[in-house]
Image (tube, rainbow, N blue to C red; front, side, top):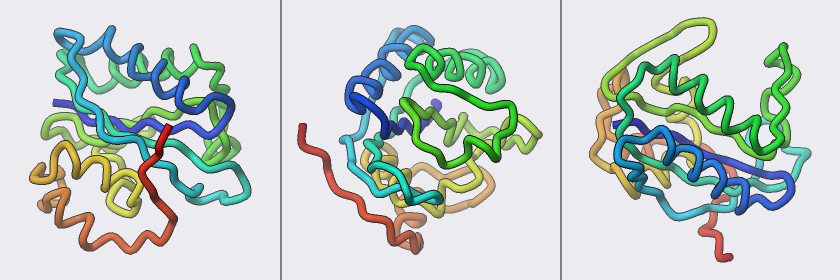
Length: 165
């Protein structure tokens, strides 16, 4: 199983999340995707930007983590996401769609292009709370803690509320 977070804070945020989920259906085994509720969240990192809509999805994927990364970059680009060559320029900036691999089975990777589990996921309520909805007992590889435990220990103070369309 693979767990991804989705976020959008530009334009039609809900539509961009839906486009992301629809794109993921094309790569998911049996096109089945489980989704958390959608949350409206304050920006994290660079706070001088609009609020995000965020959710987490779970699905079965049969390729490699690197292949999935390539697939999600294509999905992001399809929504108009501009990814700079220097990640420090675009890190924590407003975007149409952001897809992050949180957990990929029990894989741990720490390379220049890919870190799994996501290196900041245990510090972000906007990731942990929706992940806990669909996988509270999931043990995060490398952390040896469940998602539920990570939620309880997270000290993130950014606002988070269920989004009502």
